[in-house]
Image (tube, rainbow over all chains, first blue to last red; front, side, top):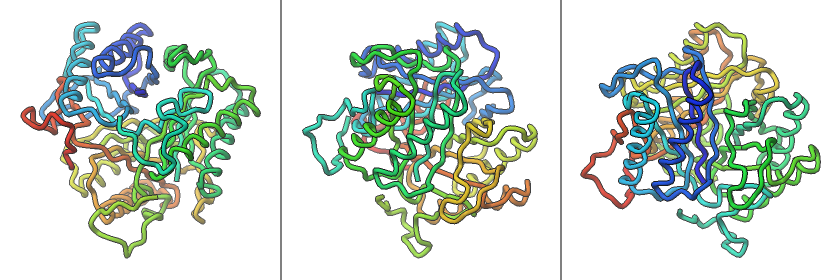
Length: 138
Length: 138
Length: 138
């Protein structure tokens, strides 16, 4: 269910970008995302197109800093979110030698009915379900 | 009120991409979106930049698979969302011969106060309305 | 905490785009966003890739029209949102001679736990906080 947008500086190799996607996918698995649920857009930007403040909150960001925005179902606890952030930062550090300071992440939470994975169907809600828009949490 | 981001593989014609936008717009009209409320960003990606799992949920996606993310006002019922997905998938199939399996969609819901359509105004809430951030559903 | 995506027509100067980012940042400061909290992606589009209806709601948009999508913490009042829209429109008009009609804005609101600004941490929630996903408003 997550949809991931990764915005990073131009000039890295295809393999580097692919590995970033791998790390985010692997980290999402650890907070309950199903296997193979991988939908990602990875976009390169020039220096002028990606502005990530170099010192906000006292964290020093380099020219390699990137931003990861993840849309996913609502309902994760704060601890699960913290665990997700840590897994992403650790994975990018371990596999790509990225600085953990360079990794900013934002989550956008939505309802289960807000996804169609093909065929024009809403796979996460049953057809027999409510017709009143009751929220389907998680 | 909807704002639509369409991310698709590079190499299609301008007309092809335009028609995708037309189909999404037409489908939104069927769930109560006003005429001419069309705000869309259509972005092409290389193979490496658009990763859409080829089999998730048992749905076979081809190299033509795309992702449509729609930000819109909250309040649609699950049935309306289902109808929207079906209209988009049917429209892309009928008008562009796209495979319905190739069409993934995600909705992000927001409040009516979260839009400005020009002139620095919040056109969907009246100036006399609350000042307490009360949600204005739909 | 805000993450800003600015989608605009191609062909403007680097300085022009930078100033758009400056204006949005300055406007966010006026509604309580902390100093240096600037995280922005600015993307150029061809005519075919950025479709902004030229007359929706009776507002005439030119070929210079752009769209600004801001993800930020929930909790601003309608008046604060209105003030933000006005500041952005006024700033772009004053500093870049942009037409106020050409400026469309959308806000996506999230919880405080939905941000990591580096180091794999969730800087806006304390580690001692709840583990039940209780919303941390603002």
